[in-house]
Image (cartoon, rainbow, N blue to C red; front, side, top):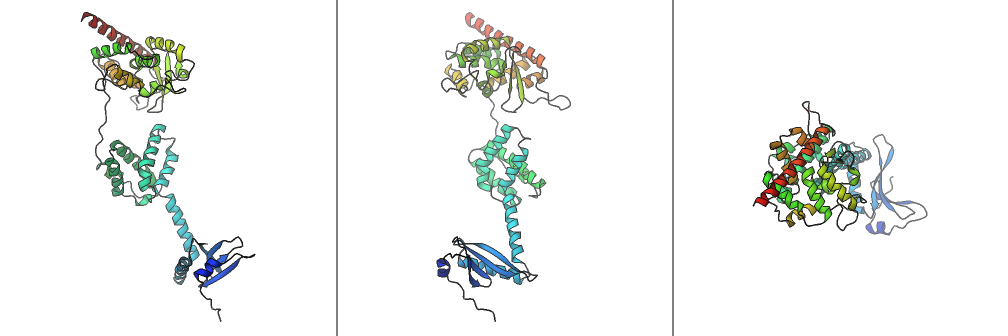
Length: 407
């Protein structure tokens, strides 16, 4: 006759003390509390598998798992056994499914996508994507199974970002989420990419165009104003060089002496926007300014060092502040406007070839067969173009000086 087991009480479970050897307190139905010499208490259950062999289920530790919770888990296991299901196998399958679900959340799949695509996407673009995902996406949908993500889920997310006034960010997030969903589809974690249907529901983002002077007379006046800049040598030199080289303001700000080749009259660096090598031919006018400046900052890393923060390049706003200090308003010119100014006048006035101008602007230029030109393509012609451009700027400066004298 089977021994009758008296159910445990919560007090018995709580008061169970460790002994020299492990012992068990049985509750009935195979459930027991295992008390270890270390003091740890664990709920377990004995049962017989379908082949008649005895096996064990581990439910969890006490007091994290109460007596009442342990009994509920025992009853569920017994119900499975009554249906011919091995509760041990069922628990292993559930555990595997939970692990798979943890691997297949939107954030987990995204992390995998980032790792695989980190060498395929430009570093600057990938950095922007990661910042946007961390800030706007993961807190909202990061823990959700990617297979369950539908169009309305992404639309709600993106409209929430738009409501914060972040229209451009919403557009970029829609793009990167689409890439992630296509990756999920390809790797069997999702059925479709719903982003194409969502993008048409977003508000349009209007691109801001930088203000620039493109009238030759205005350019001449601007150059004379820059020549008269009363500030320090570093900012004054950067201002004078900017129209000649028309690089992005941040690239001029971070110019290093190590990248300046005085013999070849070239400045070689990696562009901030595309992450590709770029060469800027330096006209004699630029070389003259650099040689003068080298006597003052040549012992430092930066061509244009910060005025008071040692080891850093000049402030990001230095050129803009200099223009404003001379009365040049935001409706007239910005540091980035030198690029549009050069592009327009090189094309419309000097008649330079489109590919030479675009290449010098560090834009992606392709040949008739669709291949991107390499960084040395047309270098001799670009040297000639940049020298011609410098002479043209000098001529505009002289014409303005003459006109001012006549008036």
